[in-house]
Image (cartoon, rainbow, N blue to C red):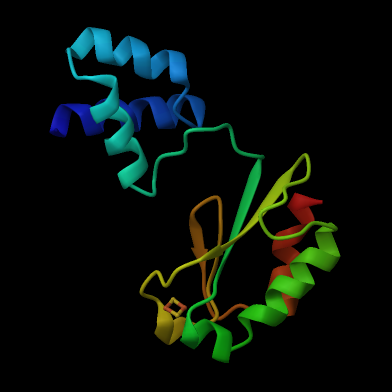
Length: 132
Ligand code: FES
């Protein structure tokens, strides 16, 4: 399992996602059934099976983040970047995220898996400049 995870991480790092052809090649190389490889890749949230837009923005929508303005941040992002949750444009994808354990720093967002805490519209405005 450790070897498989290392191989998947290497592919994820190289391509930004796990290309189907590469997973098939990995299956042949390691004699690990493709079904096991896919079940492993889909179990862990750090792996993507499809190419992602350049910027993937996540907003945590669990209670502490919502109580501290997460829904207003989503509206702001949608309006600023002219996109909707789960409906990417050429450059950006906006997702709702489950709690990532930084509730004491709510509201929390991520951009390409980098965590930003105690977010507000002013801080967000600066971060979104590169996503426009
Ligand atoms: S509810 Fe926001 S990180 Fe936990």
